[in-house]
Length: 338
Ligand code: PEP
Ligand code: MN
Image (cartoon, rainbow, N blue to C red):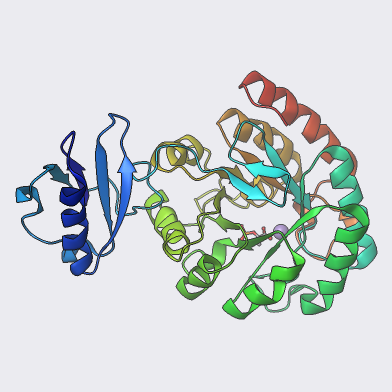
């Protein structure tokens, strides 16, 4: 619920509304609306909302939110969230941020070569997957914790910021000292324990859209993280399951401007898993930035012909450089820069 106070409502009147809601088990968030009036958001289970709030002195109106999510909604925060990664990178501002690297870490040399190529081409964060969530139990499952030392080495040698996917709650604390961002993948978008664990993390979180999730479900998943106190969530569109068989997924670029209107959180796009097709990665990257995405998550492998996973979609370093040049031109055309 959103309680709008009358202009000039007194502090004690505001306190009374807050007390009343908090006694019913809700949390309150003060929001200054665009019209300048004070709005109090009631965070929690709406069915606990006390009756008769409208009748309290100083209250102008009480209305239900447009969406079932709250903290993720623009009704609760109209200005864009800017997620800081490390000391120098911000996602959600004027600059487009590109995250690139292999599907999974295979060896120290592979990650180091990928990091150097990504950095040289202008990527700001390195994809560095230790744990691979694979459809088949026979597929490459990732190097696992044995790769932590590789993360450390690559970080020291290149100064790149790193992100990695976590598959279960225990991994959050384990990877935290080694990376600058954690990622929750498509398959775990509704792993609520994992979302809560990420919500208790100090690190920013990339949350990928489930392949059959509506945007409301996606934002309710983000709400789990926000509700635990971590405000630094970056949403990632990575394609949805449709009748199409020519591509791995259908990259739903409608979601970019739609999400931007529904939420203040930054939105990035993964054209690699979104298409699964090498030749589509660069055109769909251009399209994503034209549609208003704040960044990209791109798979690039120094020797993609030998990749242990997702061979069909990982760019070579040379093609990744071309992608960066083209995306930079599109960014300029839509008032952004790299
Ligand atoms: C990934 O980015 O490594 C990945 C597994 O993607 P998704 O969760 O979108 O399938
Ligand atoms: Mn992959």
